[in-house]
Amino acid sequence: MKYQSQKVAYWYILAALALFGIQVAGGLLAGWVYVSPNFLSELLPFNVIRMIHTNALIVWLLLGFFAAAYFLVPEEAEREIWSPKLAYLQLVILLVGTLGAVGSYLVGIHGGREFLEQPLWVKFGILVAALIFLLNVSMTVLSGKRTAITNVLLMGLWLLSLLWVFAFINPDNLSLDKMYWWFVVHLWVEATWELVMAAILAFLLLKLTGVDREVVEKWLYVIVATALFSGILGTGHHFYWIGLPGYWQWVGSIFSTFEVIPFFLMMSFAFVMVWKGRKTHPNKAALLWSLGSSTVAFFGAGVWGFLHTLHGVNFYSHGTQITAAHGHLAFYGAYVALNLAVFSYAMPMLRQREPYNQVLNMASFWLMTGGMAFMTFVLTFAGTIQTHMQRVVGDYYMDVQDSLSVFYLMRFGAGAAVVIGALLFIYSMLVVRRKEVITPGPANPVPGE
Amino acid sequence: MAEILTKSRARNIFYGGSIFFVVVFVGMTVHSHRYVVQTSTAGMPLSEEVRHGKHVWEEHSCINCHSLHGEGAYFAPELGNVTTRWGVQDSPDDAFWMLKGWIESQPSGLEGRRQMPRYELTDEDIRALSEFLRWADQTDTQGWPPNDAG
Image 1 (cartoon, each protein chain N blue to C red):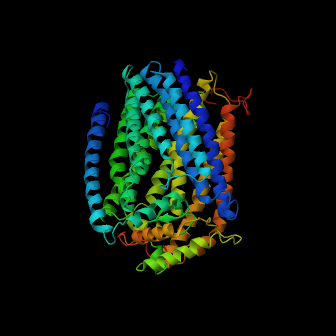
Image 2: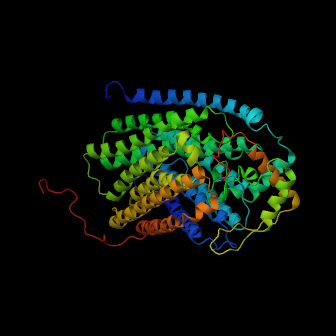
């Protein structure tokens, strides 16, 4: 930790980890309701469980982004954060809003737009927190050194905050409601969040591999260019069947096919940098998460996205378990794993010690990634059968669901592995053991060995 | 690529290209907005009742179990075409009675069957909700879903 104010990131990471725990617990509960539908059905209905699952995810990912920004901006700008007090105030506002939202969901008070169920006062709180954040990091960057990494990171964060305005715009016309809803949802995860992801990944690779900054930053601009060129008009793949003009079928199919490219580039970028890099960084766990994130994002967002994005395919697969399979792997690879990479990299420095618990951390990577991959496979099979029975043959929804129960049972098992992995990760971050579980080998092996 | 594509060129392509795509996207959005209002949802007036029905739909977060035009959770049946599936698309009264009967018979309590919670709705709310669902069903969704099963 070069700058004292980077410490702010520590509290953001703790809050993010707590919500991560709530998110996966909610997921496991929802997965169990699929297996045993009468469970808690009167006390805590499925819609509320799912709301907590998705909202906790979004908020902890944002907290992770804020943590990453507060950690890397001082190092890039080479100065302290403009106002650490405002940064803590922002965290308090976000936590009060989050607790308020969860509390009100539990008593049945919520909005009705998916993922944007927060009560209005919480939405305003998020807006205020975002503005405080933007002011704080922008002032830090403006008065310090400007780099491509902070340029792209700030652009991503400014644009995603700007798009939050559409969370307040809810037309009475359902088709218009849906169109503007995607301005938040799609243009977050398939455009602006990709800028944030690429900038953070570039920072991590710069630090972990020791590759020349010029090379890293040129890659960064190429990646984010392909992300926005494909992602903006790629929004069209959500506009096929909600009452919008037919031309979106072609625009969406073509441009969202190109959405694979930035994810392929990010994966290539990560591996090429590690291959070219001369530095052997002691934090192997952070490197594993960085490589893992870009790889799983390529499969989850890129390959599984392409799987059902062409309008001829989507006509049959839209709104089946195929979508659920893609959503889980894409979010896990692109944003969950990337945040866990940042946490793994930053936490030892924030606690001012050598990297610790790396074996447990890496074990948690394989448990979570393995669990997520298995969940994606079973949901893809379930979705394929559902698409055929319901959309081609025309069997009724509930009859089809009843015949998918074995897949939901396997999905619950996969989810349990993810939860155990997540708990192991949280443990490896918070509890510093005196020794690694396995004694590490020499950092630089003798050539020829 | 090293010589031709310098860092500053890559940056300029990124900024210039992004602005171009934003402008195209905004233009298409404006057109789509007009198309929705004038064509695809124009088959039935967006009455006060339909608007109220949308609020009822939102207040109870139906979207976190059901899907509507294929979007939402996938835990319960698609409702974008439910009035067609029930054969009540052209009759407001039948749609109301059908929906009232359904909502008031929940939860079924059957073992091993997904449970819909019991929502205490007034007749006015149920009427608004059934009108909202009829309104959603008349939207021109480019022929989706492929069949009445939704």
